[in-house]
Image 1 (cartoon, rainbow, N blue to C red):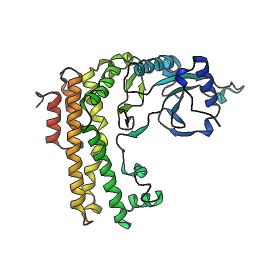
Image 2: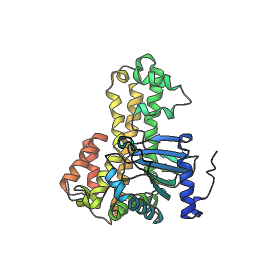
Image 3: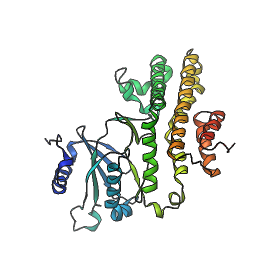
Image 4: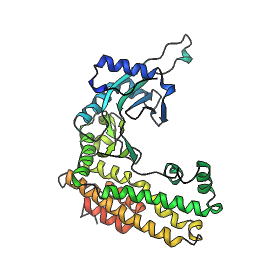
Length: 336
């Protein structure tokens, strides 16, 4: 049994490498979650070991820029930006086989701080079972989601809890001290401006609510100056786009008022009231975020019409056209 209750930050580089190699040799014994770029292994509740597989989508980058990427994220964490602290990183070449077709790609590992918190928004109702573990079994939950007419009482309880969780997340943002929210927005802006091998990958799964505020847990691996889209994008345009995307899961909420099950349930007015409460607090949270963005950019406005229009369309899907208009006016009062 490995002991993870150690202070890695006080170790030498040699001892950190040895610690990582020991962990890598026992990965099958660790709790893990698979993502789009690799696997995250949990070392109790203290550290995370991220494994990046050199597949065709990121092989070129990992081969040439892995060390630079890690050094960049390390600098960000040392600068106090809202990202986890990085402790060490390693690339591990597999043993060569005499059969060329059996040779496996190299693997790349990052050891970092485990942020204790929860994802800002649950992206879909079917992914919200963790909110109802004390209410029903997973099988009961799944059946209620797929066949709500068979157990409308449970389905409505799940839906109320799901919408309530969105209200909680938006209330959290709306009630954040301005200085704490500005710290998060400034971190995103600075990392976009300073990053050469990464950009902040801002979406609801990557933003955690933690004891110290909002944290961004992953930056996307990318050579910024070589990217035709991000290399020409201004920081205010990036912020408006990514912050709008961050709130995108909220558009799921109002769709439930259009389902026959809710319309015919006899509880429509109750759900309608909750959806209305959500719309109000979501608007307040977005308004607060965009005002923070304006402060962090020293009043700079977004001028490019295409960027403003795309954000306007996203916000209108989350709320409605009138509220989207008011929100866009926060970042550029002359657009309408």
